Length: 370
Image (cartoon, rainbow, N blue to C red):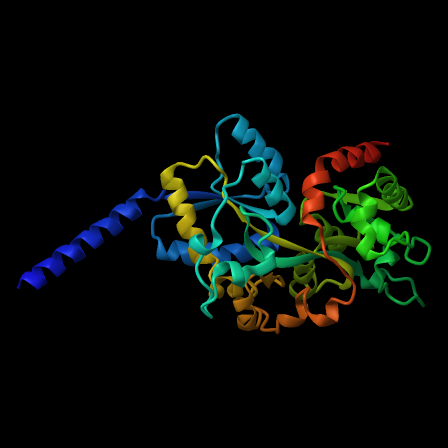
């Protein structure tokens, strides 16, 4: 009887503690992401299952990831942090971490182990590019082109440097309105070897070389800021070729059935994931921690690949990647990491961009205004 009473008391205390813990978690979250197909995949793989398991929780979305650094700086300055969880690229995570705007975490303590028993730090491996970064996916920035706009009698573009060949492939190009990737591609197509790109770009002469190469197509460029821009420009036939996220191009090609094809050559790998802003209240932080631990486990990261062609950041998730949830097609060949797509890849230098981003941004924007 004494044992039973003790057990009942312990169970009651545990239940009460669990209820208290649940009550201490905020009942709403604001998540920042990129919009479009990628954000939709996050909603389906992460947010909807989590909300189903947590009735009463409301999640709102802000599509400001492209401006995350500037906006978090402003929120911090105003002492008014309105975001709970922010999706950023690896380089921006490093900057936010260095500036104290993102929370440092112990990945093994903060995140679930892999389904294979591996510790989180081992399972995520090199995708953990910052002490503040919680990886989700491996993606690439690459090019798509209109198959029906290839000049008659001409082979379709197959090399990165075809982007700079206006004579063989006339028409508008779309490039992101920032130096990252554009500067690297320009140097690669001006004779600089992949392994020498960042050493060259670290010098004023190398930066000018990249801008001079970009100047050869500047009059034919439509500059984009939102991830949805290039897919729409391609769908409307307003550009012949344009850069964007490989998952966006997958959507245009496989879901929308537009006359668009992939140009994988010269793709730039990148990692994308969460950062948690510093300065959250205890209740908001408790909710974010619970959401992140749940939705970055092995199965949830693999589930995202059902909706978009980005590879999961956990090694243990890769074997679980299967078919697209709606199209029923095998997703592996559409991943940037597939051997058939990875013949000429540029590995981004996150440390370089964390150190040089502000200075090169200023120079790039001045060049755009000329």
